[in-house]
Image (cartoon, rainbow over all chains, first blue to last red; front, side, top):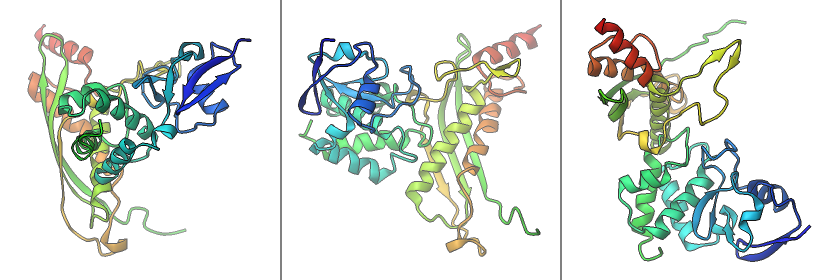
Length: 157
Length: 155
């Protein structure tokens, strides 16, 4: 089997696994990155999103073969950044997390938004994040958290 | 065993404003206002989060979340065909708490988690009733159901 090479959380990795495996299974089972959550397993909920070359993608829909040569960042890698620090504090400040299952995906989606649009409007936040479902917060606090992060982290993105 | 199974009740009021699209029969929730008496609020940030989330679940129950059952089996097998509210469906929600410490509760508190879910569905059903001018007798009031109600009343 040919090994598949990609960058994962800042390190070059190579894996000898079935290229048709879902990226989420590779991340959770092979690399033990359990911050990547499986909600629906079919791209409806966004709990499993990771950054692929800076954009949020559903890792449950991505075959391993497709990440060859690309850069993947999970919540475990992202938490080492200043941007994460700002987002985490903003989420904590307004209660953007209740049960917490959607939070890794929400944070990754917010990073994907802010890195391409550092000062989004409320409508832009809602439109960009609408692929991520949350059952507990009612979303309002998450929108506020992203707005706060956008203000407090001005210049980081 | 003896005891009081329901030592306290919490109370709440939900107001829901909706718009109705007469072409697609779709409902948009424009704004919600809520007030709750849950004794003393211990942590307002978490309480507001529970209130927002509970209300949005109640709204979803009232106009989006249709669970079909056929031959004893659920017909919805995923989040693609069991639709819950997304960011785009979430209205602005304003919440106020009545500070009314409950003498038998820890620090004056009463229960609040489930309460916030209760009012959303009836409130949105009644708001839809007002908006379309027809009785809504069933939830979820999906576009298909609203179309049925309006067309049935016409004939």
